[in-house]
Image (cartoon, rainbow, N blue to C red):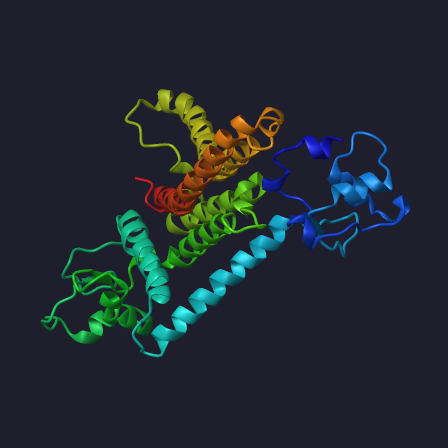
Length: 365
């Protein structure tokens, strides 16, 4: 039976949640009662008996399939919804605290607030804060940088009025780990992309961290999930670029300016344009593959290390098992700790690269 020889089924998507065997029980009395979707998910390579089916379902909780054969609910779909709800609950609570004028207190809220401001001040604004929309310090236009200081501004306060949310974040920046030296930009041109970058960063982060919980999994360990995230980044990049420089201007800006004779431009422009277009698609494709590969690789290494314990030679030798089992467990713990770091790192890299791609679209030159 192929389903039992697949040692990586725990880290893949499916219509089951893997749980300890005592939490599940045989599900069916007759083979005719087994849904076709369940039989397909078990990957039998021969006609199975009801005993084999129930044995294969030990340690599995079947996800209800209300849509039948046309659309299957999977573990990663449910976990993606869970991740989205977690992000919503956390930042709805954080926003309410800021809107109420209360200081951000407690390690939990401080942690998430610090991450949010780090992405804003160290990723989005520095990457998207250049171009013809920016102004030199001292300008009275929107985009002026207001540094934290005890001195009053030399210009009329209404010219530099911060939004309510910006004021609250500014006032409590020291409470969430930034201190008074941090510069806050009123109406910074990059802030219009913050909702997307924040959303994708924290969604990817929570999806990654769910894989560290028992019986869960990382939706970002599925190429379809990371592919959709990459498509969203591509869509934001294209829309932002076309809004910034116009539809025609954006697509023409894919080709850098070339100081060439007109005849050479006519010959080279189409070829370079196609190359740049393919490069744009490839960059976003790599964005999906990079996240998927790094998350899946960690789970695979952990599965291999724990698989050493179940190896036939180890199980049959007391001396060998006394060496392999502790080493496998310690190795799994070490890789697990590394996976926690990778969860944050890959979320940061995805958000940073998405911001970088948006920056190249809105500031093509």
